[in-house]
Length: 295
Image (cartoon, rainbow, N blue to C red; front, side, top):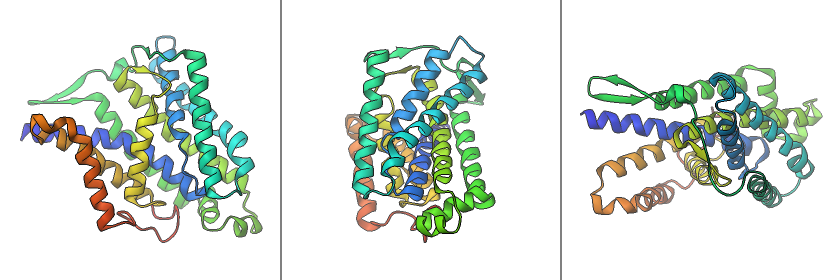
């Protein structure tokens, strides 16, 4: 029983990080129909900020600075790269997101080099809470709490605030929303800022786990988050979260209970299961009636 509870905790922590990333991807798809693969480079920027600033500032200030840097980078790429092609076909937006991703990776390689940068990241969360025979890492608790709080905050913003109503209106029909007085540039910029906050929070947690960062730091994580978003149902924030937790539980469960000689094939089993879900339910776990409104 102790081992089972420990595995559940580990799965919740992993799923929480994936959920933060999937929320950002799902939000941008709902507003702009944009699959933003540059989201991974936002995570990279936040992780570099954590590693480079740790030790120079008090812990909470490092976290705030890292998230602020990610939000700034997110707003910059929205203004420079995505705003000029907003009305372009989806494939143009997709190519643009790949271009931004490669550009930021190249910049990171030029500035910081290709070798990992390491440091003591989040030493305050390096220990664990002990409950009987259970050892619950503080970082896992922080991941779960952060995800729940930010998911609730995003849902509240979308449902209860004027800017949230405008974002939902723009997701439904940008032209009609603009005709009714919605400032689309402002709405999209706010969406990118929220996406940056989510990416920044994930970067803090991932940097705390890894303790190091390199130019490819966010690439793998964002691909998993994209799969989680599609698995949950494109345009559904709840679906993105459910898909992320499903992948987290599959990953940890298979790692724990597969025979030792089959554990190297864990990821094959994970994605084989996901393919099976797509065969049975190709529209995803949740089918939103309208983009972004299903939160």
